[in-house]
Image 1 (tube, rainbow, N blue to C red):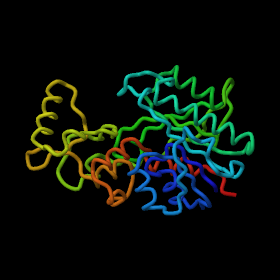
Image 2 (cartoon, rainbow, N blue to C red; image 1 turned 120 degrees about the horizontal axis):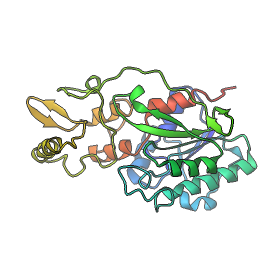
Image 3 (tube, rainbow, N blue to C red; image 1 turned 90 degrees about the vertical axis):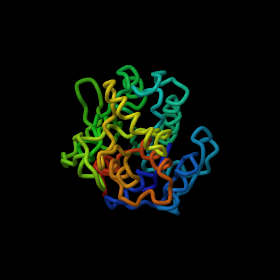
Image 4 (cartoon, rainbow, N blue to C red; image 1 turned 120 degrees about the vertical axis):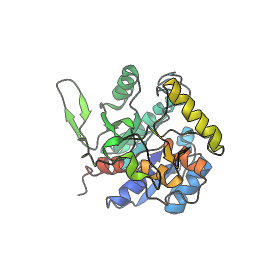
Length: 288
């Protein structure tokens, strides 16, 4: 397959394809974050970097050859954790750039497949707008089924669809619950939570180096009733997760982000896709 990955991030799409045995002939990556590109090229040096998605009309690629378009367009304006500017917000409106690119390819290759992901906390209005733009409604899957993390997401795709009375919908079944608990991914220590909260891009970015400050922050939040469920108790102390544990939350191998600092690792993992979920979705691609 020839893949075009927009907002490529840490290259989860490529890793998922490799893991389930789908041969990649060419993989075009649109990404601007330097350390995301660094990690991608570390694992897959043959990735073709094509730059900023906003400049897609300048890209020198064979559009007709694209078999699969991947998009995890920015969620900041859609998420309950953001300011709720909506799909027309300055960041999340990049979704419509993806739609333009997809429609351009469809004009040359009507059989092109696509996958678009966004947050489960997006409003019904925004989900409806996105669904009508893509011509298909999403499936909603929580990463808690395949990892130790609570991560509710919408996935729009034509990899497998079904027609209801009124609409075309993404027909990807829910993955089997693997029963992975938060305690199962810890290198040491204990947790009182069954699942970790959703890993976010800026998780503890200002607190990680100062563990006393981190402990005070956690305890105050718990006292106020707003505690986050993704820390570990070790020897009567409170600690953040390790880089290995953060990787495990998203279903990656322990050493996947070894070349990056923990802050950069958290940034990419928190802003990225859950690897086993993408493997599950891609398993329905017709391999004939």
